[in-house]
Image (cartoon, rainbow, N blue to C red; front, side):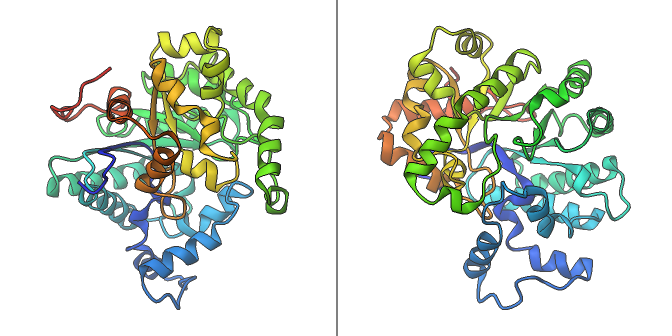
Length: 363
């Protein structure tokens, strides 16, 4: 296994922002007959650095930045290649289970329907799993939250036409600052009606800021404190109104458990076994937190919160081993806590086509 942390599962991983894109990006541009934006890269390490520089401050204009990747994922062949390559890369890294999310609305500009885009990725996943039968990859079709409420409902209904064995859940992604979860209540009601597992990017960021506003730890900490109540408001809505099964990021949750564990929010998370897909490396790199200590990961583990560690977009943000290492350096996880982090992810996964490894003791 590649990762010394022992983590062989990821729940929060954007397929089109994953490291799987690195080896096929130039080929995808050739397939699309478009000029490659990084023509002078020396090797894949250099190419990744150039992509990372391009994606700086991605939260400010996330859809526009991601267009560098999504515009060459507009055909069945390109999306099949992405799905297949994703399985191969993650399997070779030592993973047994991954949930990869993608928003099909960004992959239909070449004439595909939403259903055709999802089906092409799923077929690629199936091809990859044929080569790596121990591996399970499930796709989480997601809605880019800038669309209207009615369009989000339509997209969920389109998602439902796909192979549900490979698409067990849905998610809401992209700019939370401009589109609070409140906007898409009807989408989640429709997802409930269709018996989807429900995820939501929430309490990640609530204000778009220019990079120069985040040039010091003191400034980042001040921003975090200023944003705290709005972040918590969004968690409350996702939990009590959207009725999510899991949520991604949820930056203030650990602090709430450290100070307000008896609150209805914290007690509901415990009672309903809500999974939290933490992305500490992404949060730190994006200047959304001053350090990983503000996440209070140990306190969550101590109180039985089903928290897991994930990479987010490891094409240009910290990968899982680096993210785990930065957290381990801060918290010095015990062997039991490391086992908890892995077991929490397995316990809150949406897919179940293949069995849980025998050495995983579910909470």
